[in-house]
Length: 596
Image (cartoon, rainbow, N blue to C red):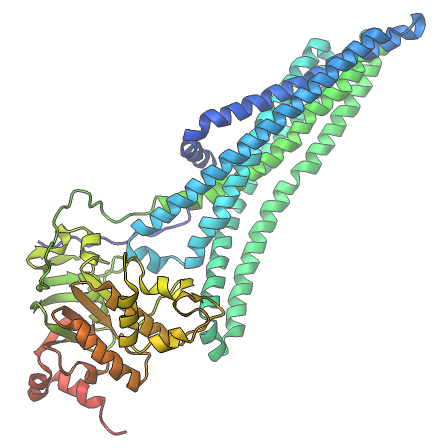
C-alpha cells in the first residue's frame, strides 16, 4: 500500500506569546533553578539591607535636630553610622555574589542551548535545509542565544531587586507616614499605566526585529558564499538592492521597538521627579502643622527614590525580556521542528555485505511538494556490478542515489540491500555501507590529513599516501608548506579539480563495501580524469558501484546502464546493446559527439 505523502508544514510567523516563551525558558533552565533561587535570595537580602539605611538616617537626622538645642549625642550617631556601613558592605557582598552566580548559570544555559541546537541540526530531515537559509540558522545559534543569555543574566535579578526595592520602600513609608505614602503612590501609579501601554505595543516589533535579523544574516551568508557568481554576472547592484530592502525592514522594526521602549526611562524619570516634589511639598506642610518630624522628610526623600527608581529598572528589564522572548520564539521554533523518525528499535544489520541492491517499484516526491519525482522505479544491481545511471537534467538520477542513502524516505516501494529493506536498518547502518563522491566537493578548515581521513579511525600513513598517489594528488600535497599537516584555510587555495581529487582519495581511504559517484570527475582535466579513472576502476573492483554521469564516454564499460527520463527507467542494458537499440540512450550518446 502506498504510504501517504508527508508534506513539509508551512512555517508562518508565530503569534506573540511572551509569557508562554518565558515559561519554556524557565523549564529549560530548571536544572539550575536552585542556584538561581540562591542568587535571587542574595539580591533580595542585599536590597533589604539597603532599605534599612534610610530608617537609620532618620534616626541620625532626629538626633542632630534635637542636639542643636541640648547637645549632639556623637556616640549614638557613631554607633548608627557603623551599623549603616555594615549594612552597605553586606549589601555589596551579596550583590557581587548574586552577579557571579547569574553569570555562571547563564553561560551554562547558553552552552546547553547551543549544544541542543547542534544536536537538532543532525536530527532534521533534508527538506528542512532546503527551506531554511543557512544564515538564519546561524543567527539562531549566535544572536538569539546570546540575547536570551544576556536577558537571563541581567533582567531576572534586576526584576527581583527592583520589585523588592519598590515593595520594601512602600512598606517602610507606610510605617513612617501613611499620608506621605499615599502621595508617593498616586504619583507613581501613572507611570505603571503608561509602562504597561508601551510594553503591549512594543513586543510585536521585537519579534519582527529578530526575524528580520535572521533574514539579513541569511542573505549576507548567501551572497558571500556565492560572491564569484555575483561578480561574474555583475549582480552587485541587485544584491545590494536586496540587502538595502532587508536592512530597511530591520531598521524600521528595530527603530519602532527601541523607540517605544526608549520612551520608558525618561518617562519613569519624570514620574520619579514628580513624586519627589510631591512628597517634599506634602512633607513640608505636615512638618509645619507638627504632624511629622524633619527626619521623616529626609527618610521619605530617599524612599521615594527607592520607590520610583525601580520603575525605570523594571521598564529596562521588561524591554530586555521582550527581546529574549522574541529570540526564544525563534530558538524554540527550531528546536520544535519535525525530526527524523526514531530508529532506536531497529536492529537489522549487514555483517558481511555482498552488495546486492534491489529497487522494487520505488515511488517518491519531495516533502515540500505535491509533485511526484520518481514514479515507478525498479532495478537490480548484482554484487560487484558497475551500474551507471544516466539521463537528462531533472530525470531523477541524484534523487535515486539520495533514496538509496536514505537521505529521504520513500512514498511507496522498497530498496533492499542483500535482501534487507533499508527501512528496517538505521540510517547510520545504511551510510556505513557506502563511500560517496559528489560533484559538489566539501572540505572543512583543518589539515589535509584530517580532511582525508574524515571520521575514519586508525588510518595508516601508507594507506593515505597510496590513495593520494592513485588520484595524482600526492606530489602537490608534498609541495605545500607542511605537507599533509598543512591547514586548509583562506591562505591555502585549492583548485576545484584538486578539491575533487581530495574527496575521491577520501572515498578510497573509507574503503566501504559499495560506492556512489555523482559526476566525480567533472572538475578535472582529461589527463587527470584518465589517471583517476584507472584508480577508480581499481577501487570499484569487487564493489557494487553506482555512477551518475553526464559524459557518457566515462561509463562505456559499465555492467549495467539505467537510462532515466522523467522519473522512470526507459532503457537498460550495456553500452553496446543500448547503442544497437537506437533509442533514447543512443540519441544522448551521439549528441555528445555530433559536430557543430
